[in-house]
Image (cartoon, helix red, strand yellow):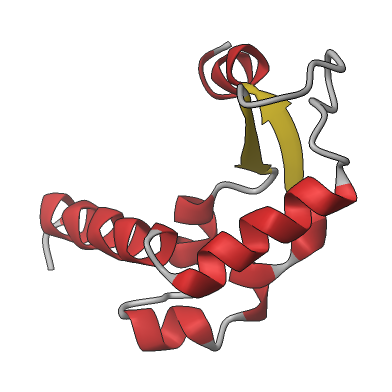
Length: 97
């Protein structure tokens, strides 16, 4: 399989995971653990988001996840300890420096 096709398939799986009810529950648990407050700057409220410390795309690659069913059974995808709360500004900084 070509690299471009593989990256597209990984992105599709990533998007499908993010649309799942189990993913929404993961986000809620991350928010509960972080009290809904940015772990970098302390801002709270609607601007906060759940962030993967190890990117979801990396988890997909490292665990060779090729379909949603494999993602459902992969503990690394749903590990609450891999999540943290960040405000949108800190989240952008984390991803793009």
